[in-house]
Length: 259
Ligand code: IPD
Ligand code: CA
Figure 1 (spheres, helix red, strand yellow):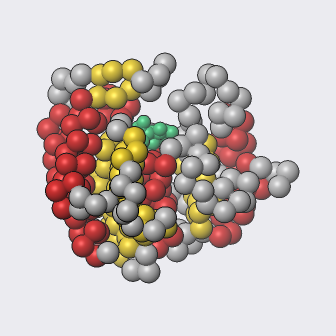
Figure 2 (cartoon, helix red, strand yellow):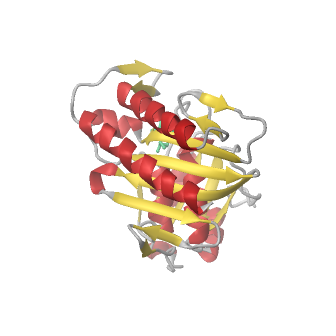
């Protein structure tokens, strides 16, 4: 499994080099939905990572944002990839974007790597081994006072089509804590929660590739990560809340006071 971690770190950093070459340079931008976009850099970085996995681990399965599911029935490992999490930021020339690579072994998330190329910040964790930022151990914030805490959140691409768009939750939360950040990358929000830059994070309408790597990193940093309604974490539910145990409980009281 350590071999998988080392290669995941390498592939994320190499993809980061490709992505940075395109940053603030002309891009080909396609619309996937009304406001959901993909650039040629997303596609190039994803193709690079998938090609690298094929080369080193030809038996492994893959789930990737732009390519979908590549299922190898006999494999124990599945790589879950977001080549650029924070594509809108990237396309606007705003530097908060990351390569996110999570790896499952026999259906359980066990490795997470999130690389922020513009800051050269490499977050990683392997189950049971702690969580790290550039080889320095990280841990979740210990704050418990709401008014001293800064939370992160985000809003789904289909916010115009559904009322389940986090606007009401946001309005309640922003009055309860010191402030809220909408950094525009779920993967970064998760690793910034893991290292205590954010004191908590919740979001609705997120995809497995946004959070697979971050899940392992938050857990290994000592954080709690659950469904917003208190259910067990589910990679495919699209809803998460994370922070230390007391903070998660207090956040839930604000966001979902009926529970
Ligand atoms: C998005 C970002 C954003 C979150 C969205 C995601 P993308 O991923 O993580 O912060 O609010 O829900 O879809 O499209 O930049 O890869
Ligand atoms: Ca994403």
